Image 1 (cartoon, one colour):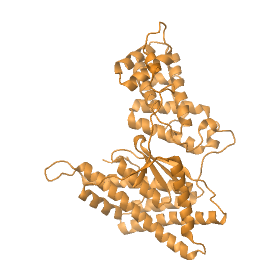
Image 2 (tube, rainbow, N blue to C red):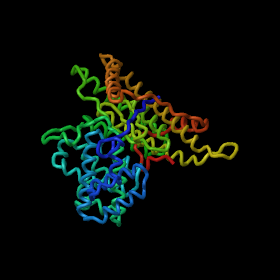
Image 3 (tube, rainbow, N blue to C red):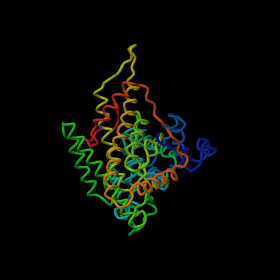
Image 4 (cartoon, one colour):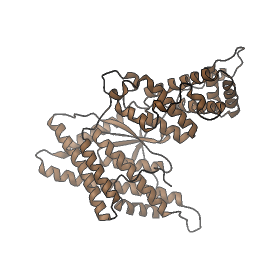
Amino acid sequence: MRKRAKTQSAPGPGGERRSERQEAFFEPRGIRPSVTETFLAAVWAQRLGEADQVASAAARLAAGSPRGVAREIAACLEQHVAALWDNGWQPVDLDRLVVARLGSDEARLARWVIAAQSRAYEAVGPAANPEWMAQIERIGARRHQCPGEDYVRTVTGSPSESLVAAVKLMALLTQLPRLPLLVEPPRRWRSGSRVGVHSSAPAVLGKVRALLAKAESTTFEAEAEALTAKAQELMARHRIDQAMLDHDRQGLQAAVIGRRVGVDDPYAEAKALMLGEIAAANGCHAVWSRDLGFSTVFGFPDELGAVEELFTSLLVQATLRLRAEGSKLDRYGRSRTTRFRRSFLVAFGVRIGRRLRETVAATVRAADSESSVALVPILTARDDAVKQAASETFPEADMFSPSASDGEGWHAGTLFGDVADLGTGPVGSEQTA
């Protein structure tokens, strides 16, 4: 079983929960409301499902000064995004959620908002936190891609539709909960500081990637298994070497960190189990946030990259295999495809976890016989530090155990787990067919 995080509801646009102030936006005041008030009224209407109110507010805003309205709404969005960074969100997290819950227009606007807001820290960012700036590049939120200061009105070909997209985006942003702070947010960065965490073993990870790539490309199962086993052995050996180095220095030299990894539907529960198994085999610990579409994986910097790559690769492989299996029917001709695929993924994740742990255990035994110091207590101390960090961050996380009710799916997933390459295959969709 794996851990699942609990989430809480979020406050409204101005920080308050639904109250008399919400209703006040819709009451006549005898004076013309400001752009911000009209915009926030539309946001509340969107949250309440009042499409007519949203369209009416957007039409009123579109009738105003185009640039002035766009810039004021952009300021609202950028201020809220800055607050989300302070509340633990990161660019990739936000982009993933907007893509999953809204349309392409809102996703494009969100990237423009992130890009525009980044001007507040773009000068210090590359030195202070290159990983954060790399996230901005990864989601395509670079400043030169943002179409001017009045970008809000150019999301679509229609000003009114663009404003509706802004309302929908703000409505989602105002409902997002506070997340654990995994890294210092941009507001706290200072010139000359460095808050990003880097792996101390880029050369080792490069060798692992090369082995996994060869395993992915070969057509011979025996060769693939040998290559992937060698890659996992190299990862385990590096972990052992780092543990011994820390032991010699009388303490851990690197801090446990957390990284969020996307876990999407369909079959998110089974995928979260798979990620948890991969993480546990590599000295990490995963906590799944069901409603937000990710798991937070805790571990030492050197292990986290390998865990994410293994998960992505295995998910792509499993997806391709499930597509090849096709649809499934029961004896009455009714579809049981969903049950089959869920059971397949659960069994696959369990079997992969066992394979990885077997390789790690063999590597530890071999290294232990060569060492004058007992390795197991040292590695156990590292594991305890990782679990403690996870428990402190998610003290109320509970356990979950995905169901697997299709025998054929369980059997097929177990067999595929025995022969699957643990490689980084071609980039493709992580969605299971």
